[in-house]
Length: 367
Image (cartoon, rainbow, N blue to C red; front, side, top):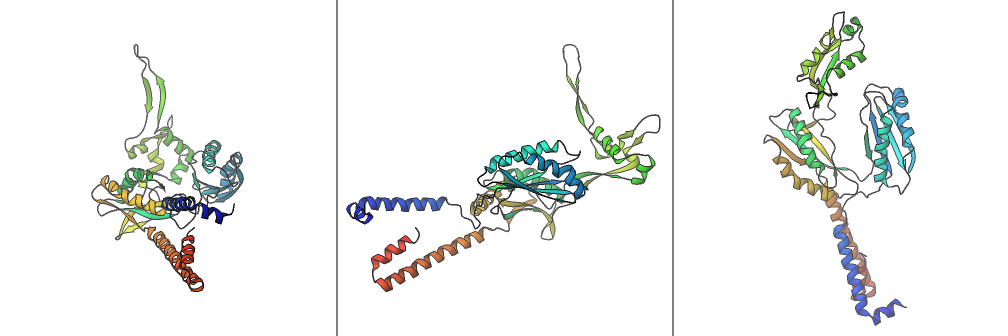
């Protein structure tokens, strides 16, 4: 049937259809995620495996090869690219288009766990993350204080603010940066180790055996059989120096004879300064499928709750807000759209001299 004839015979039907399209468009616009970068949904997963002090050749032979062998069993895997540098192995997993990335992430984590069973002692857990160009930082949560130490601020950010921050919709929750993690540092003296003929592995074994909790079975006491765990955990860091390395006929050798123990901190990975004082920050990174405006709004609404759980002398604030950039881009888009509609309407009016045609053309521009 000719659509023009149909519209003239059934004008109310056509009017209802037009109104339905308009209402559906308005509903879609209100629910649409507003952002600058599109959700590309790239089928790529990164796996980063740190191992301090290991050279690239050792990392490739002892770590990367095992990972690459196990990654070949992941569903939808296309190929794996890896790069080995001093103390770090970075693997990039490419998947076929259309692969269910949630399932791929779950399988990747599972095969990472399997591969770690073949790796050297002391291998820490790797970082597994998806890559997407739309997952970008939208601001910083900054914690500062004029009286608290940087370590105390770091603890408050890690154990109080981060759990609340992780529950917000559309954001990822990386660990806080700028502070120092508490670390017990055992500094061995090479000359003393050589004089006692003790290897670093013996020192590590002594520390492990002298500071642990392990089940030792049950003891029958009448009609009861209570569990008897062995608890050799130290109460004070200095007690680590009293752990024996060697005992026997010869003079016993303790940790204090070959090393010093310090309650120190690790090497900071980043610095944040607020009014000339060090501070701690948490990077606010939105997920690829989330809107920048909604993420920033959720973070700002949660700020009073975060401040309520912190001590009075620690302040939390949201800095480097990126939502104005998105707002300005949307405003510019709307301005250009209105300008285009006005210019198009003027051109139609100049050449056709018909207001009805102008209205029809202008109303059809958004659709």
